[in-house]
Image (tube, rainbow, N blue to C red; front, side):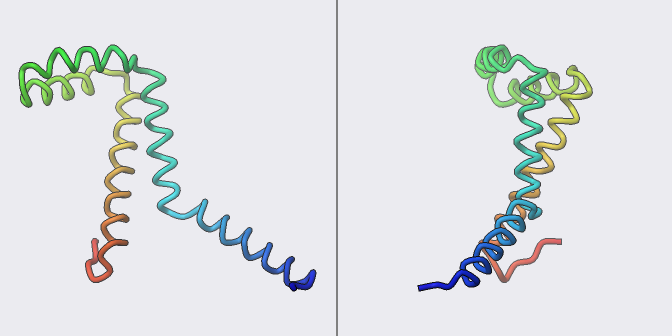
Length: 108
């Protein structure tokens, strides 16, 4: 049976552990990705984008690439910033996941 002081100490440890996990670099990358997606979804009509993408996809991979390039270049700057932040956070999360699965490998 734990004493009152042991319970308080363990509760304090749990709070510190949770706070560190919620403010870690990986957590901030996840927050940036989610917020950038939400920001882009706020400014862009996603159903229309997917509908146009389906029509363009019939032209092949080149058509899809041109579609995305044109769509990004012709949007508002806020959407471009959100897409850049989302892409950067996704790349950084990928590096973190690769680093965590292979301890002998280091990324610069």
